[in-house]
Length: 246
Figure 1 (cartoon, rainbow, N blue to C red):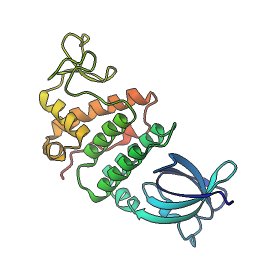
Figure 2 (cartoon, one colour):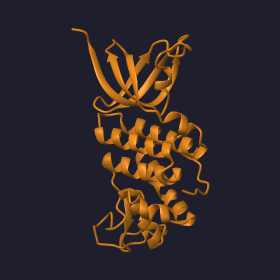
Figure 3 (cartoon, rainbow, N blue to C red):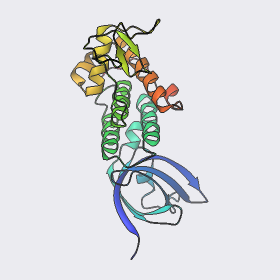
Figure 4 (cartoon, helix red, strand yellow):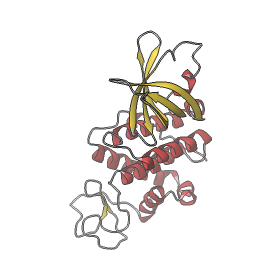
């Protein structure tokens, strides 16, 4: 029996292989992270080379190989690459997203992670919200799916009901005054409410936030992400945090 399977996947990154081939790393819906060879896609006559660029979503057929699988078919499901690459803020945010998905998908398949990433890239490509806010919401939700859900209401250490103003990313979010270590950063209730909105996908609230609140929230999201991923995201320092208008 021929070892062939189908799945849909989003392209996380690519590497050149030989004269005309490419190794494509994908996050798939049912098989988790897959590294596969796309034969001849760097030739101008390739039938599906453009469908296997970063941020693209495709329906794929794979042939199981000894070391790497081989992509034999690719039909576009979401052509998000070009519109994302045309906008610097969207492009840098998308790079941070796919790097995060790559890191969070090492162990096992996660359909929720796949669907979250595809939805975030689609939103970026359509300019539905600011790129920075879209990234922050994606990071909080991706970490939550991975088991690191932050608390922006009750104390992350003892569970005491909020509101609380001290934030300790190492503990998991806001903490009460009794559990707050000396020098713990303090945030305004408005910033904490924005973080909660980004986590919940409350875009009416998130889109209405001012630039100062967005900047403070982004700093907490970045610190929380870097802490839980242990190794820093290479792409995160390059993310555009310029004021955006949606």
